[in-house]
Image (cartoon, rainbow, N blue to C red; front, side):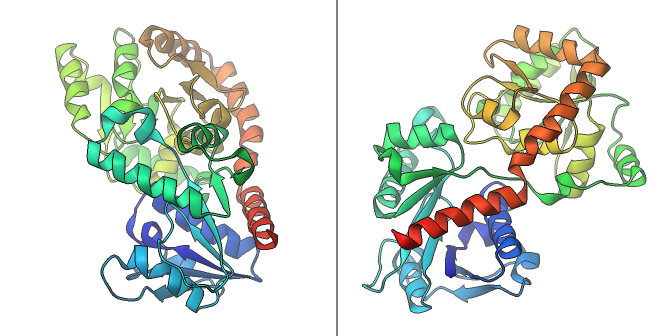
Length: 367
């Protein structure tokens, strides 16, 4: 088979959708090397260079013109005789020729519909129109969690039989055994505490960092936070200053993947009390790193965390505080949960994901 991909996120996004796109192409090319994988975009970038170096992965420049991604990319995929076009971020091209081609689209989440207050009116309308149009055009839809599948059915009115759940994985560096020397060098580089709890993710309201800060108030537990700051950070900062907690919370930015993997391993507990996620990749990054997780009992987070993570009501910092103290003060419980969770998280390994993705492609070809 020849499979064409919308390469916009692959080449342009450093995290999130970019990581998903690069990992998906990499694992398919590795586990099903007999196929040809083609990335279409206006231009290449340094991102994903290692994936493009694989012998069965190539780049095709999209035809020039206004809105070429919407109007030219689909036709370009047909021009190179692709069997399948896969939109990796909730969108499909709008224009096609009569040449046969199957269409698959991945939808990650519909947070803009569940939490409209975080999006402008214009963005909500555009997102809804694009996603609705893509689900109508697609022969099959990939949802990255059961939660996202249910949201597609509820909000976009898509019949269940058109949707397949294929979980995301995470970057392979989180599954690797890093040397003690490297891990210790990261501890020294960032001047990390001897023991700490960790939070990773964009510092925005939905991720609920403020409740972690409230939970550690009055407890001598250091918190390390890694993520890009938004305006919400000011709200968190204000609470830290008011309650004299600045020295208890350390913020890190521009941490490389290898460094991040080491920080996960150094942490005693990973805390992720998000109000809603499409999947929650940091949860599985932590589980692959052998670090136990405290996360919310809502949306897809129990799917990602498994039965040995600890769950909280994200609206209650008191609940979060009790669970943090429970794990912080109980090393044998941390070790037990980490060990069992490491077995559970293998369902998100590359081979399993590749198999499930390929099953979707095989199914759509014979539709």
